[in-house]
Image 1 (cartoon, one colour):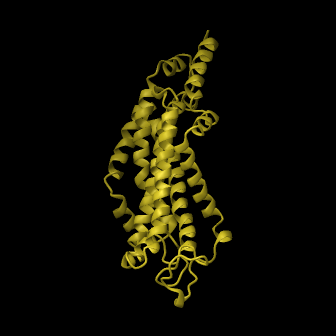
Image 2 (cartoon, rainbow, N blue to C red; image 1 turned 60 degrees about the vertical axis):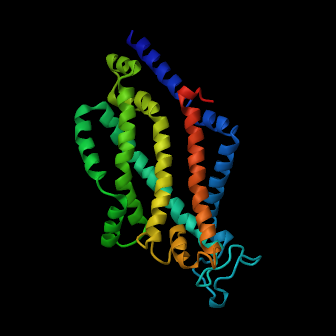
Image 3 (cartoon, rainbow, N blue to C red; image 1 turned 180 degrees about the vertical axis):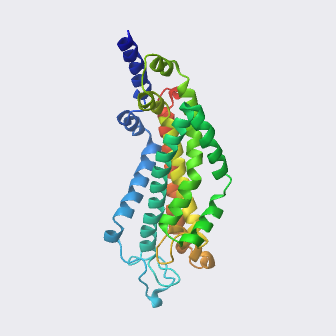
Length: 296
């Protein structure tokens, strides 16, 4: 009888996770024009970041006599106030912004998922973790990042570390709330009744139920991390001056808003397209994976 009950609960868990299977999600996603456009833009941004040394030159190279040149055939994005190629700096800026977003999202998701699900499954763990989460969430990210930069020095690693510390509590809260609901489902109670281990319940029953909010929160973390990195670089507290970033390019263009709009236009457009495309993509993925929407 125990083996039959285990088989039934496994079947329920597999059916609940069926809609969230990556092949099904991708197949339905490709039917949506807006999602396809967003996906193409993100792939182009990622490809440009990976191939930056191949498709463009040194972003810090400058020619003083070529300063503030408008876009032309030889320099398609024009030059900045120091004579540097805006195209090169925009492409290399994608490396910093996308790296900060992706790494922060991955680390935050990995830590937040484990803490959140364990907090949802075990009351004693929940009491400890949530008090720590409440304390960490009281620190504004900009203040924390500025403090860590002052201590550790500016750099991509410092920015990522500061963002992970601030974003993990949010991910933990989202996953915990879903895990609390999932832990009370009949299939989880049945699994406990037949003697399933905590690890089996974690991986097979609770984690699949949390997949949609985890994915959505990870995407939000990515877009927020990209914006925060740009904001920190804008105020000079992010990356070192010799590392191109979209935020630093926008900061340098503040005194040339009308005389050289290409200085801020192209980095700003890249930043907007990246964040907007990710938001559109994750909205469509959420609609597909949400059972209440019928997975349409």
